[in-house]
Length: 432
Image 1 (tube, rainbow, N blue to C red):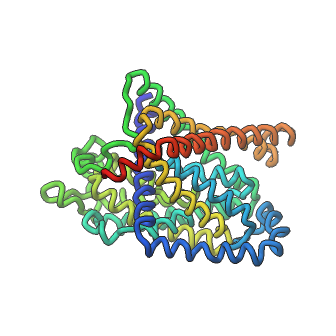
Image 2 (cartoon, rainbow, N blue to C red):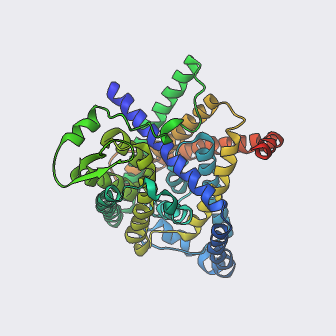
Image 3 (tube, rainbow, N blue to C red):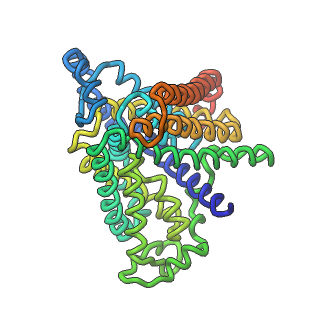
């Protein structure tokens, strides 16, 4: 039982760390006129292309997206662009308000909307890369990036991302349903474990009267990771040269760890990015701090660094060149998430932390129910279980409705709370 509690805390810290990255990237983009101008220019092809080519492509794309042939449409109807904005808005509201990774719901949301799993993964990964490359402030974070640590880590990340991308593509070529089933299973397992732990954490906090910190508290502080736990001590004591040195600013003489553990960690992060399309940032922070013993300040800088390259490499080399990226969806999600994150972050000023923690648990569990209820129909199509098409379709529909009702209800509540308290929020902004 203690192992599962530790693993749950591990995942929660990762989700919160990734949300902090998302919030920072959003602030960087919207806080710069040049970056906003770039975003608007990226949206021009979608708007013009949607008007010019929508009629010609409208009849062909749904069949292509639903079949085995890969296709990378840059333009589609205005309707699907609006849906992508709403999906990004929902994820952004969760990220900004809850302070834990709302990006986990994007791929399940896209799959629920009828997009093939591999296309949802590639598109989500590209959306993360676009956000990273536009919002990155690596030049301001160079003092917190251990270049040797990052370079060795990225060797493993590239290997892992390549393996993840190849695995997804091979499964898709064998059978598109098998590919969807694999991706659905991975998401169901991850969201299920994280969701049940988050609900346990919420009920425990409510019982003890702990309101909690919506944004996860001090994972950005210098102290975290300064004191080594048992596992980091053991790993750092294993001398398999060459040893990579880091954290000279935090401990006398710095620390060192074997390149083997960095490559293995990078491979795990890259594999997750390649398979799930999540950028890998949600794993980097807990692995670095709680397993490798890297200080949180160095971890934050290195995490920003690795997301740019891991997401960029995986999205372009493993998905874009094979036609598994839907540009219109990616840009719509980026636009929606930027707006949602800002609204959500402001709402945290007027909503109790315990309420936010409860909503996070519900949102993640909704994603779990969505993917779990989608599995029977897919397993039935593959002949793994004996289930009628009608029953499978009914379960899938229940999962879809449950998911969008919870996420939609949460979104309405957050936006309603924002407008209800806009005068108070405006006053706080003026005094800030």
